[in-house]
Image 1: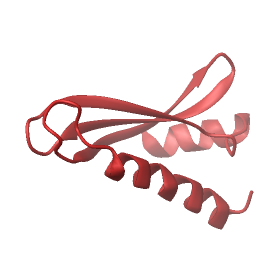
Image 2: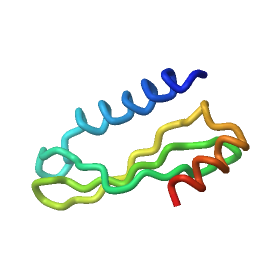
Image 3: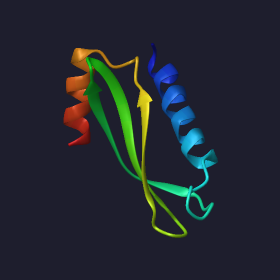
Image 4: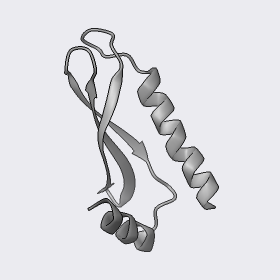
Length: 80
């Protein structure tokens, strides 16, 4: 994947977050943090969000196929 492809992929994750109403009040979520986790040897973008209306917290997990081991280590260093 090129950097442009990766950015489109991440952008699509934010579309999902922005299009998902809060399950408590129907408000919109705001991303608070983004991290990369490995679950069963599969990399995931994990985004912790909070509802802008009621404060309900929700975590979104997206498969991150563009992260290989080297990419994971570089991304982890940049996010920390």
